[in-house]
Length: 110
Image 1: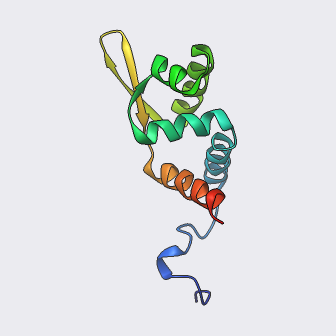
Image 2: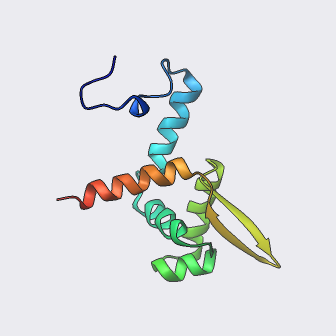
């Protein structure tokens, strides 16, 4: 039975939460709890970028961007492709990007 304002497709997909699922959910929210990672993911939601492009666009040190991208890559939230010696990053999890978009929308809502 669903709540009056809840649509059937809005119900949670898992009825029980095992340790692995709990860990992945907490890591996803950890990734989204850092303002630098939010800014990087938001930029990558718009276009593919190299580390240098991200650093320049967001006024960050290249080492900071590389560190954050490594964190996001380990969670499989970003992916990269190589073009010569340059790596170009893009987002790799539409579910998380949707979650980020909803959170931004919620924060901007009156």
